[in-house]
Length: 113
Image (cartoon, rainbow, N blue to C red; front, side, top):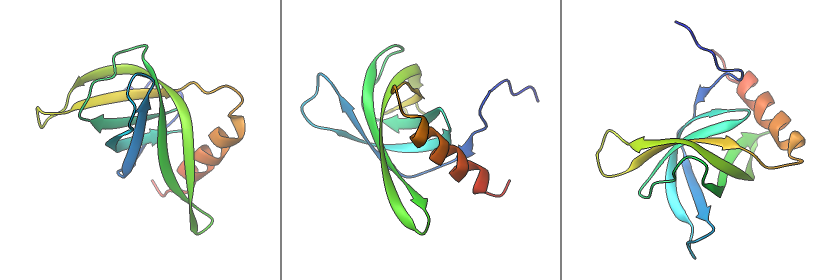
């Protein structure tokens, strides 16, 4: 298998909140996988490639849940298997978030393969 991803992904299924600039309320979604530089999620509204939003999710860090809110850019969007929602690949694009990226990367590395 040829996996050309620079950052490994892990399965990560949890609720996420997606805040789009043109929507007054955040949208509830569900994550599918996570890497140190992005997240794949499923939600009821599409986010087209290039569209930016804030994505909030929680990770268990040092025996407590730590909230991450990161600016993201949609990389790809397509219909999910259920046919009523969208599967969206998001790239973390927030500037000056290296500390958050390191914490996420350490979390991913702590998960047994």
